[in-house]
Length: 135
Image (cartoon, rainbow, N blue to C red):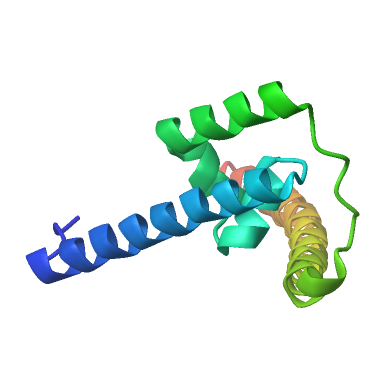
């Protein structure tokens, strides 16, 4: 794998730093407003993924400390109204992936059966050929 050019590494660093700043600001806003803090709440407020928050040791520690100090956040609704397009897209892609996996499983099963039949025919033809050659 070819290493990234320096300008792309700098852009990635800048994007990560900006996301970090937004996450810190979101955590401060939630704390100031007295709202329950959770990884999901901070991620929504900052416009970052929860994975980003969990992967950042410092942000993770800050969120966990705040949550421990002020109590756990209430459970997030399954389909938050402001984020329905993202979750709808994820659901649609997940359903599509499940359909493709099922289709591939069916195709593999069909191909295995065809291969077994072909191997059986091949074995039968070899046996017949062996009988004719010994005559």
